[in-house]
Image (cartoon, rainbow, N blue to C red; front, top):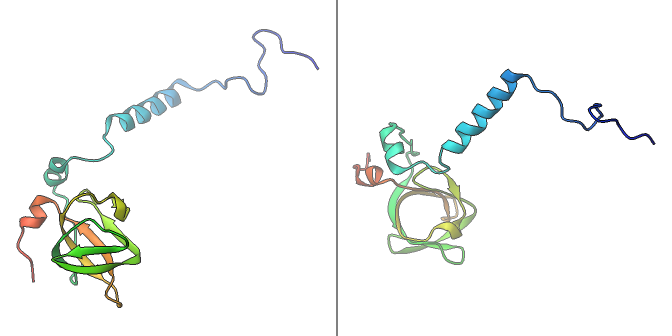
Length: 131
């Protein structure tokens, strides 16, 4: 087996990258690093983002889920096996990630278990119920 000479390219040597490709990659990585992972409340409110809630949602104050159940408006409800909880920033989170009470909109499935939950922003919570 022959060792490569100094400066000789081998199959695992760095591949030359055109300057424009390098600039694009650097720009994309740099801009991704500059943006925050979770947008602030002001960013969402200032962006005019409106979350459309299904017509059948109900409003309530939800306590953090415990052992597959959740307390909403003083009523203990089961969480559906495929329950989905969205934060005020619209990120899907696991039920155990809810650490404090929140105003929510929610939907129950045919068995009465909580199926979908949207945690509300202060603006959404203070808006009148359309129904």
